[in-house]
Image (cartoon, rainbow, N blue to C red; front, side):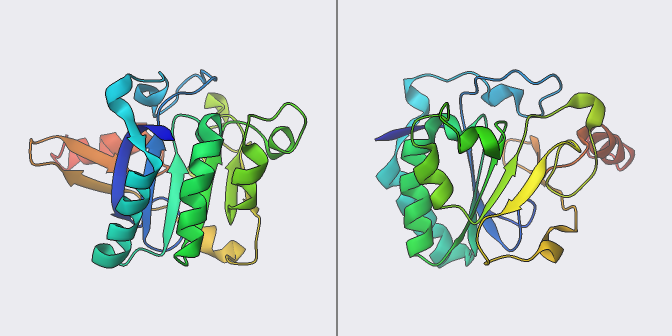
Length: 200
């Protein structure tokens, strides 16, 4: 089974509580105005496909080399590939890691009769779900929520609400000179601050 991958980040503090690996998937049935991950909306080509086994090995490597405490799934729309991502989430939980996913679907939709294939299995393997479409006129700087309509659901007792009170963003410069930012933030303000610092 393959997953259409947009990007991988082996360790960050910016995408959930603790020190986490992040998998951004490609493909999203929604087209929310102002989406900050618009490059991951298309499904992608065959070269973007990675085997579940390979991604699980990547998680294991992040545990050994970076001492991660969790795995986060973003996109794109993770629940558009729920069956395959459930396998990765299962592997992560067996390794003792926390699991978190964003979805443009609401929790009610994901638990209902019109949910994407595999949604129930994926949900059952998540500690945290952040749900709801991005609504541009409700954009906020709230931690891990792109807009105020989105909700943080603690699906297990692994995490506490106070772990979701700080907004964190990280910026790094890649070997080819690109500036890459990670986090759920107001990127207009964030990019303006970077420009003032001479980074952008």
